[in-house]
Length: 235
Ligand code: B1M
Image (cartoon, rainbow, N blue to C red):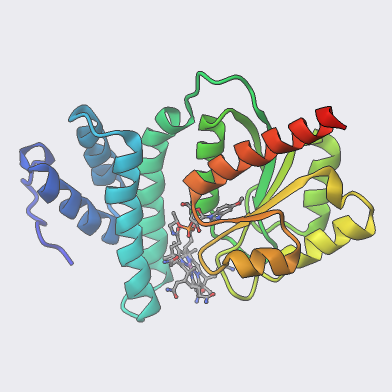
């Protein structure tokens, strides 16, 4: 998938549509430098960070995901694509995370045990920061013990869990059930997300909400924290 692989290709010469399409190809080919350059060019042309993220990066990764599923791309290539995506995200991070808003609350977030996917979780963390939350990111492959230790250490308002595999998403229930057993479940708002989840799954595992994407996660986090504070001050 190398539509324009000419070495002399100057990304600045491309129209917006051509550049976005070239970035999909560059992400597919795992070309991190080109993704960083393309991201900067779109920003210089006045694109909002959210649009660069959704149209150029997330859409490019969606295409990678299809060919990964169909056995056309394999783990090493997808790792390169993920690395390129992270290059673009690093450029966008200060813009997505910048906030003039007052601190709304604290979130502990991490990908569950057995799962090493972190791109979506990282995006959620950035958007939460942009919505005024302090975010403690536990990274990937978290057993229940690491979530519990972080809850104790940071006393957050929210626990967020991410899973990208159908085999790892049930682990969210292990974490929530352990919180129930320890009598601490209701001390926190629990949000869950990740591509294979849905609303029904969120309810079934006992989460407060399932969040479809990073923007929904940020909105939901704000709404639930404010609602909880309002309920606490009314009682
Ligand atoms: Co993996 N992988 N992968 N992979 N990988 C998927 C998930 C898969 C759907 C690909 C496919 O077959 N089409 C498939 C899962 C199938 C299934 O479970 N039914 C799969 C598989 C099978 C695997 C391996 C098992 C492959 C193998 O080894 N044979 C292996 C598992 C490793 C493990 O975790 N133990 C594996 C490995 C990898 C890589 C390491 C190569 C790489 C990860 C690199 C990294 O993350 N650092 C990788 C990647 C990149 C993908 C795909 C292609 C892209 C995922 C991604 O980053 N998407 C993915 C295919 C796909 O999802 N289409 C795939 C972009 C990201 C922005 O979206 O993560 O959905 P997403 O996040 C969104 C929302 O879901 C939501 O908001 C985010 C932003 O809007 N969200 C939350 C996510 N977390 C949230 C938490 C919240 C709220 C919202 O908390 C409050």
